[in-house]
Amino acid sequence: MRYKAINKSLFINNRKRLVKELKSNSLALFNANDIMPTNADGTMRFRQNNDLFYLSGVDQEESILLICPDMPDKKYREVLFLRETNEMIATWEGHKLTKEEAREVSGIQTVLWLSEFHKLFHHLMAMGGVEHVYLNTNEHYRSEVVVETRDARFIDWCKTRYPLHTYERIAPIMGKLRCVKSNEEVDVMQEASNITEKAFRRVLKFVKPGVKEYEIEAEFIHEFVRNGSRGFAYEPIIASGANSCVLHYVENNQACKNGDILLLDVGAEYANYNADMTRSIPVNGKFTKRQKEVYNAVLHVMREAMKLLKPGTVYFDYHREVQRIMESELIKLKLIDRTDLKNQHPDKPLFMKYFMHGTGHMLGLDVHDVGSMYQKMQQGMVWTVEPGIYIKEEGLGIRLENNIVITKTGLIDLMKNIPIEAEEIEELMG
Image 1: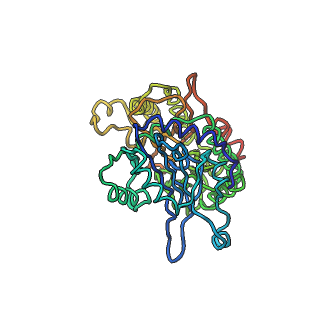
Image 2: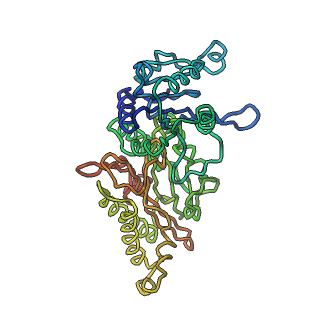
Image 3: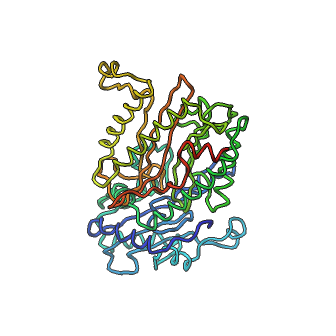
């Protein structure tokens, strides 16, 4: 693997936290993600199921984690199943985890080959006192699952084979656990942010009129990979000129023009954890007066928003307050006026023309991390703060985004070292 090994104590503690949330006489099972096909014999790069990784640290395909806390035979309370390798697999695909290596990575002592799964699973279901079976589904609030996963196939198989057990949802529990980050997780996310910083500083020296958006994308990926990242945490947005007003612009195929703003929404992945940064910079290295006015308005909203992040805050209350702050800035920019505000439709506020998205989201193993957006914020949560102003008639979009850890005594800005002041950006580009 490219990243520095994570201490297995993280995964041991994660499993202990999970067990506390399970009902008595339960079994919980987690499948690795599929390797997705492209065409012919091609496949996409493997990306581990985040819940399985969170609980085991195993980053290998065709793996299964089984947790059965009340099993009388203690050696079967945690079992990790791995794909058994052979000479052909080693020749064509490379090294696969040995049982001892898997024990060292995960802290799980009972590691078996996949060929032993069905026999042991039946034994646990029939003889292990199992009443409740926790199975995994993707219940993210933004998910639109259109492919059949290994988890989905297993759910169908398990319910057909064992119809009289009680089936439970593990996704809400995993969301509750994963939304609060341990110190070890924050350290890994800090490294993802540090790599993102290195790439952004590289790009500041590279951007100039005439350069293509995809050339800038190439500068980012070069710096990401050379620092141990597998690449982008998500499809990068390299949006110059009017493209900066398209929230999820990913074509990245236009030339950057003199006088335009370049919006960069990128982040490095590191050890399966993600950074999520947005910066808006002048293509020629110098903001115009208007660009700087809008830029500083967004920066002001961002900093005021950070002051509102604390334990006990509910996201939707926080977002409404940020919208009020944004409304004041839009008035100062003469994009809306107070007279029109008095007559605006309550369901169609005027600021939505210029600031139409949320102020942020949870961040972790998923870029839009799991967990309820309605729960109160807690210490240990990591949130993005990303206000923006998009003026389509001016071809001007400004968004700024940092990653923030909520603590008992304040905030930790994982991106505090990434340049954000307009003057500093101009100096570095100059």
